[in-house]
Length: 152
Image (cartoon, rainbow, N blue to C red; front, side, top):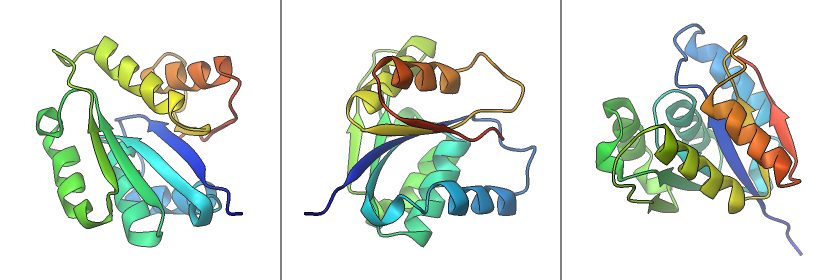
């Protein structure tokens, strides 16, 4: 019997404060241990979402699901480009079709991902204690699911 972990990835959109090589190192340390038996659910936004998508597509054989609060076409250019680049590795794209994109629709997307997965790996921006990433991690905890926090 092969156990497949379904893992939510959540993280900051603000990633400019570190070089890309550091994100690759973090993903190697904190995502690759799960990769051989994981299917990752990733929000279709910029920042950690796009960086982790590209890293997972290039470095693992894991299943990848992209979840957009509205549609992929409504996402920032950086996110659309990452999805296009990794398209042949993406297993599924879920568009939740929120009527408008705002904090509530992104929080609903994050809760949807947590509800459909067995654990969460979060990459919050160091020093920020209020964010969508922290709300997602708190929701994961409320659901009694394991989570890993990797401040960046």
